Image 1 (cartoon, helix red, strand yellow):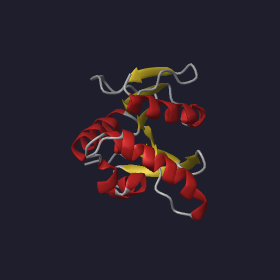
Image 2 (tube, helix red, strand yellow):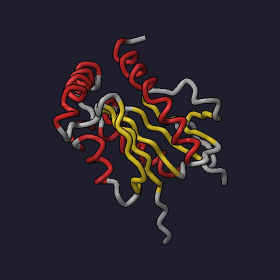
Image 3 (cartoon, one colour):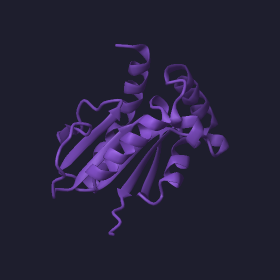
Image 4 (cartoon, rainbow, N blue to C red):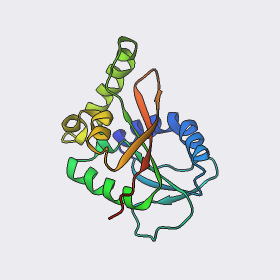
Length: 167
């Protein structure tokens, strides 16, 4: 397993309790994993690959996109967001956070250094100004419901509602 995968998997493990809590909060019957860092399990919930073509069910679903900004190009991320939006009622985005306060600087500097070393060099992270920039750009499709910072403010876990526009 490549070193960069191990680093991001370790960061994902730190977020698993929050992800399981969010899945219970949204009453998701199914969790759709949109990667690029894959969940191995999530507290006994039904976990499916979100990238395999499937039909939308009436049961509430939660999509998880872990480190999409750090590991995908802008084009790859856009395609994944389209699929995620079509497939789920709610989504969780997990990625490294851009520091906003002095208290977050130590963790942010460490994790952003790891992102630069282990992530994709042409990732969408820089072009979209982090996860907050992505959510601002995608405000017509995703409504932010909750933000959680993890690991001393270095990771950001955001729960969004996938908005459906009629017409």
